[in-house]
Length: 161
Image 1 (cartoon, rainbow, N blue to C red):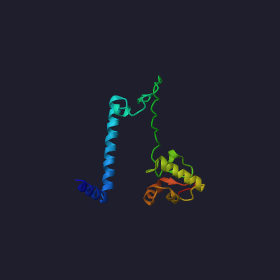
Image 2: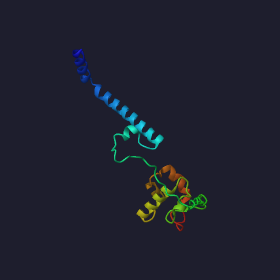
Image 3: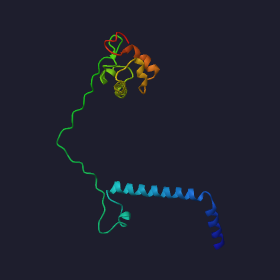
Image 4: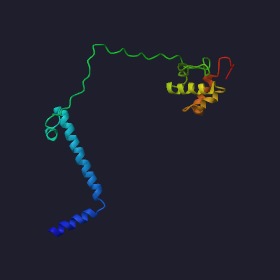
């Protein structure tokens, strides 16, 4: 009997699957133990007896729910959504060198993030020299620029584009 047990142990030790299978088994056992502990804590509100017995007998361990201070104040009123100005049109264009975030949001496909990126580029450049400068903004490509071109001007006194 000793001989066959020794041979089995050597065969198992020389197998290439031994270590990965052992790791999987340990992981499964760990998950089961953690699930059992978590389930016990949720159900009873304290550490399970098997775990508590291994803890120090001097200081009992209990898990308390977090304390949320009660307030008598009413919740703040909801912030109303801002009404945006009408969409930009060729008759009512957006002037790039004077525009604010709200002005830029009137353009199709331009939200807060892209409007801020346009303003950052304008600050970096000083002012836009041509409408094609918008291509330097991330997210504005040729197709978007083609849609924006009739809706934007450089400045109020540029007499065109």
